[in-house]
Image (cartoon, rainbow, N blue to C red; front, top):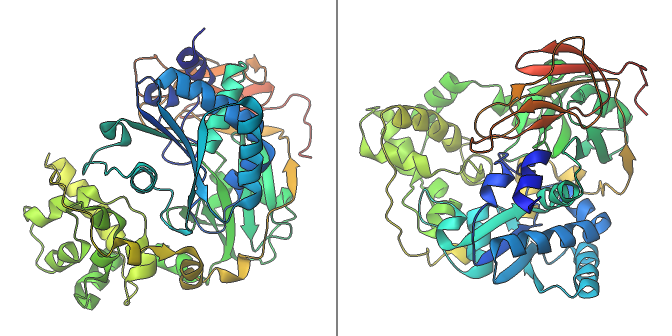
Length: 446
């Protein structure tokens, strides 16, 4: 069985982003392979943990991926400050005699954005609206590489490494079954240190923020990388709680037309024609057919504009998300013209340390996430759509007993999607958009 078939059968998707099915992304030929070990979202430690503790598996997988792609040059991109992680992967590269280069980057946000990575590592610019393969490059995450190693050994994606930190008694790295309740993850880490809390699922810049009450119905997916516990009084939660109508009204009345959102926009700095300040200006006299709104399609939703650039605390990102939906419905396209890289780009990169302060999360930077715990679950709720594309189709029925690793959701290989597997052994209790499995031995989380 070839590599692509193994990846497809294991249900591997991008572990560090939107969940693009890996059997489709890697079914290509490319000159360059870049493995993303930057972990550019502030505070997170999952990828660093993997590079320290699973370096052998990651390096072996990278070599197989590179051979499949026919890649001429292979890089692991990481931050120059990750000394222990760099030493771990370098040791494995040397012991195996692989031609994998370590590309060390400064600590800025969003260094891990794949288009920024391509520019930093090989000096090429992905065209507006394009993807790395347009410049003969494939970018994948270290977590994805680890899952591919497991796939090579016929093990499907049924568990997830996550960072859990913030207002939590025991900040750590957890290894949990896919479909584990978020509240159970919090309990496993000792529980929250405050009563009225919210949860950032993912990083503070691009993650989804939910309340403690909403978390009761939310479980871990293949793409979740972190849980950050914050107070409901935190500015990040308050901003997310505003709602789109209020965000637009405030934007119309409070935008001072300073252009900082454009000046610091990572895609604008690469040479893409996206000018958030022009979109904010056009919002005042809203006209759906205004050509400037087409530029919203090039927004990567990184959050630099709302969390760092804007002196008024506005959210050009949320405005872009709203405008995108309108523009796409009209079938319009973004400006494909690529300008020269902005001459000020090197001076406008957002330092991670300053970003943490601006986010109001600086007090958590001392949480080093050195502890590790692997937990089991007696109940999992597994979504059939944990990836970009079509949901998997259930292949089990209520009352059926399934074994850990058994296929429960299938999808044709030529479709954009991924297979889903049981993360625990037990009885199927519900089949719908999600599949609920309860352990028949009722083993408590440990």
